[in-house]
Image (tube, rainbow over all chains, first blue to last red; front, top):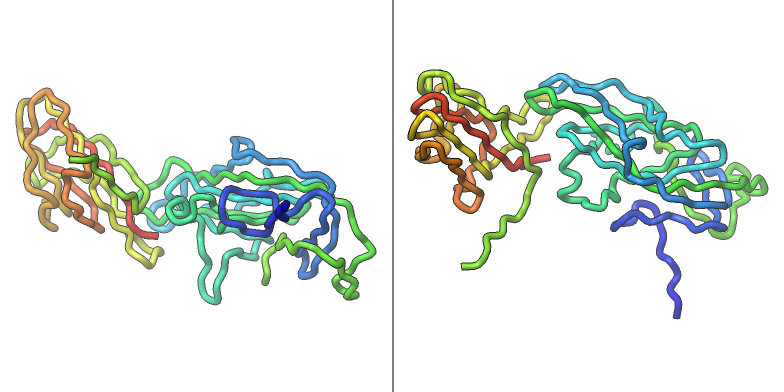
Length: 188
Length: 123
């Protein structure tokens, strides 16, 4: 008996696309879900064009600028599913919206670092989603007593091409029968 | 005796290659910088996993210690360095000493070259 694919966000293990072509997604953008049908999916390889160097933050707690991830900008009617790995010994904060931190608790915000590979080799905890030009931002913090040569972070994942489904509306309570929730911006 | 397996607990980092130039412990050199610094609130420590040493200035000794002039004490007993030989100690031979301070090296005679690799423990 064929098994249904068990697809969902932040799935542990090597990255898998969160939805198949033809399925419906609800993208969390601007505090509502917007509904789309997935038309096309392709991979984004972990490669130089999708890597960013945040420079060399000063020793003893130096921080880089909060840097817009223009390399991850998606065209209209497309979103990306991405995982990340930090390559140098810095801690990295992720924002979706320049002032909207991801991975936050009540009082503190978790960071990406080189230690991620030790407890999360597949990087599923780093997974995030970006829709059109709702940019993600990153900032590096140097918790060491020396200046690193670089503060690199690299991304990989999937690209999803969408078709709008204007007949559905979160605001008006008209929802598809089955859809996958995709957090494309921070939950404030 | 079977092979020795070391379970990785943290990421590995290497020190710079240090040639001793100061006289004795009073001028011992920083070989590894600390990583337990504000604003990090949880201390990061290191465990020395590998040591490489080379001397073309004759046979001698090498010590690793904590703090300038080894104010924090020695990390290990003194190592014997063979002349013109790539002397190495690896993790299966080294005691698992966990340190949260800068590591310094001192040698007699001066001019001995040392590099270490550490495993970082912490967030």
